[in-house]
Amino acid sequence: MGIGGDINDSVATSAPDLVLIKPNVSVMTKARLSLMNPNGWYCLQSKVSVMSKTIIDLHCNAQLASTADGATVLGANENDDGVTVMGKAVINRLGCP
Image (cartoon, rainbow, N blue to C red; front, side):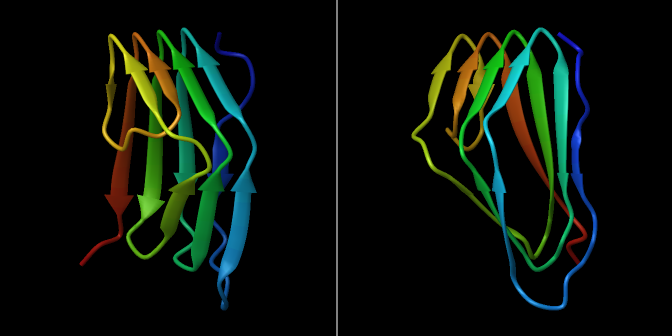
Protein backbone atom coordinates (compact mmCIF):
# COMPACT_ATOMS: atom_id res chain seq x y z
CA MET A 1 0.00 0.00 0.00
CA GLY A 2 2.77 2.40 -0.96
CA ILE A 3 5.15 1.26 1.79
CA GLY A 4 8.70 0.34 0.82
CA GLY A 5 10.91 1.31 -2.05
CA ASP A 6 11.33 0.38 -5.66
CA ILE A 7 13.97 -2.14 -6.73
CA ASN A 8 16.82 -0.48 -8.63
CA ASP A 9 19.84 -2.31 -10.10
CA SER A 10 21.72 0.19 -12.23
CA VAL A 11 25.36 -0.93 -11.90
CA ALA A 12 26.74 -2.45 -15.11
CA THR A 13 29.04 -5.40 -14.47
CA SER A 14 31.82 -6.55 -16.79
CA ALA A 15 30.72 -10.20 -16.55
CA PRO A 16 27.34 -11.91 -16.34
CA ASP A 17 25.63 -11.29 -12.99
CA LEU A 18 22.89 -13.60 -11.67
CA VAL A 19 20.38 -11.68 -9.52
CA LEU A 20 17.57 -13.36 -7.56
CA ILE A 21 14.70 -11.00 -6.83
CA LYS A 22 12.83 -12.28 -3.79
CA PRO A 23 9.02 -12.27 -3.69
CA ASN A 24 7.51 -8.94 -4.69
CA VAL A 25 4.03 -8.20 -3.33
CA SER A 26 2.15 -5.06 -4.38
CA VAL A 27 -1.27 -4.21 -2.95
CA MET A 28 -3.13 -1.10 -4.16
CA THR A 29 0.05 0.66 -5.27
CA LYS A 30 2.51 0.97 -8.15
CA ALA A 31 5.79 -0.95 -7.97
CA ARG A 32 8.73 -0.30 -10.27
CA LEU A 33 11.66 -2.63 -10.80
CA SER A 34 14.54 -0.99 -12.67
CA LEU A 35 16.84 -3.79 -13.86
CA MET A 36 19.39 -1.96 -15.98
CA ASN A 37 22.57 -4.08 -15.83
CA PRO A 38 23.18 -5.10 -19.47
CA ASN A 39 24.93 -8.26 -18.19
CA GLY A 40 22.18 -8.99 -15.67
CA TRP A 41 20.43 -12.36 -15.56
CA TYR A 42 17.42 -11.60 -13.37
CA CYS A 43 15.17 -14.25 -11.83
CA LEU A 44 11.86 -13.25 -10.21
CA GLN A 45 11.17 -15.72 -7.42
CA SER A 46 7.52 -14.66 -7.54
CA LYS A 47 5.43 -11.54 -8.10
CA VAL A 48 1.98 -10.79 -6.71
CA SER A 49 0.01 -7.69 -7.76
CA VAL A 50 -3.40 -7.04 -6.22
CA MET A 51 -5.24 -3.95 -7.49
CA SER A 52 -1.87 -2.47 -8.44
CA LYS A 53 0.52 -1.97 -11.32
CA THR A 54 3.99 -3.50 -11.59
CA ILE A 55 6.39 -1.91 -14.08
CA ILE A 56 9.66 -3.66 -14.91
CA ASP A 57 12.21 -1.53 -16.77
CA LEU A 58 14.68 -4.04 -18.24
CA HIS A 59 17.89 -3.27 -20.14
CA CYS A 60 17.72 -4.43 -23.76
CA ASN A 61 20.58 -6.94 -23.26
CA ALA A 62 19.49 -8.24 -19.83
CA GLN A 63 17.72 -11.56 -19.32
CA LEU A 64 14.58 -12.09 -17.22
CA ALA A 65 13.06 -15.33 -15.94
CA SER A 66 10.43 -16.32 -13.41
CA THR A 67 10.39 -19.35 -11.09
CA ALA A 68 6.59 -19.65 -11.15
CA ASP A 69 3.83 -19.93 -13.71
CA GLY A 70 1.49 -16.99 -13.96
CA ALA A 71 -2.16 -16.40 -13.17
CA THR A 72 -4.17 -13.32 -14.09
CA VAL A 73 -7.62 -12.50 -12.70
CA LEU A 74 -9.43 -9.40 -14.04
CA GLY A 75 -6.13 -7.86 -15.08
CA ALA A 76 -3.35 -7.77 -17.65
CA ASN A 77 0.04 -9.47 -17.47
CA GLU A 78 2.07 -9.38 -20.70
CA ASN A 79 4.49 -12.17 -19.73
CA ASP A 80 2.15 -14.35 -17.64
CA ASP A 81 4.63 -14.41 -14.75
CA GLY A 82 3.50 -14.16 -11.15
CA VAL A 83 -0.04 -13.52 -9.95
CA THR A 84 -2.00 -10.45 -11.02
CA VAL A 85 -5.44 -9.74 -9.55
CA MET A 86 -7.30 -6.65 -10.82
CA GLY A 87 -3.98 -5.11 -11.83
CA LYS A 88 -1.43 -4.82 -14.58
CA ALA A 89 2.16 -5.96 -15.12
CA VAL A 90 4.29 -4.32 -17.83
CA ILE A 91 7.86 -4.93 -19.02
CA ASN A 92 9.64 -2.08 -20.81
CA ARG A 93 12.87 -2.92 -22.71
CA LEU A 94 15.18 0.10 -22.51
CA GLY A 95 18.48 0.95 -24.21
CA CYS A 96 17.79 -0.94 -27.45
CA PRO A 97 19.33 0.47 -30.61
